[in-house]
Length: 349
Image (cartoon, rainbow, N blue to C red):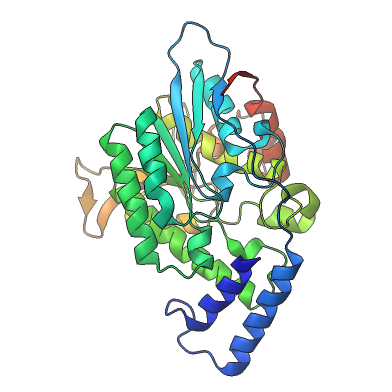
């Protein structure tokens, strides 16, 4: 698989990674990439289509959800439409809103941020109420500079906001959690992933969207249950892995389109308003964290720039009696996601 080889090239030549790499270091990284590339298997089939109407709520206007991005947005690695992020988010959003949700997926496996433009054009034709973008991993592995990747992402967010669509971006996942990638390549992949996630958050919030950090969401569970959380290619999430990601994204997506407001009286420790750069840096290291625009004293900007709200809506969405509150694990998130997001598709397109 080309991705890990490209990560190694970034390690050797990227200005954001190693300023200088000797022949021995370059050889080590390329050797690790070669081994990882032959260890990671390719998925056997393209992702199933998740387009359709979710939720049995007759007589109510449907909400349109568009999904853009790369293989993670498309659900690469699973075998059934109900296991894809689009289906999970569509079913969960329908339950939260009490309205049907029409899901349209335009994500393309292998896409980089520069490939978002045609996806955006296709999405604009259906005029989505809410758009979810999952992008970034291929920018890291193809040694695309953060500035270029972010510029394309901002263009996409602004175009969607211009037609009135709310936008939620799941930021670059932590490629350092991929088991076949060994040290020091793993450490470098993690660093680059978080750097891009931080840059994405700053740019998206400035453009009027919100972000949810996916980061190392699957990292702890991969070590404990690799057969459960990752698909057979050992690179993309499994059905349970996508359920965990959808559970992290759903509360922010629901809030963006006007689901019931939160009832929690106060923010939890580690949440609150801070400068956008600070919020972005914190979110990159804390999977499941939402960052959105905020105001302080009626102003959007302070001495350090744009104000931002840092919060974890996943915890806010759990009832107090739920054991998830007292020591959450990825496995418990998966179980909750399956129970909470499970809905039937009433119309398949």
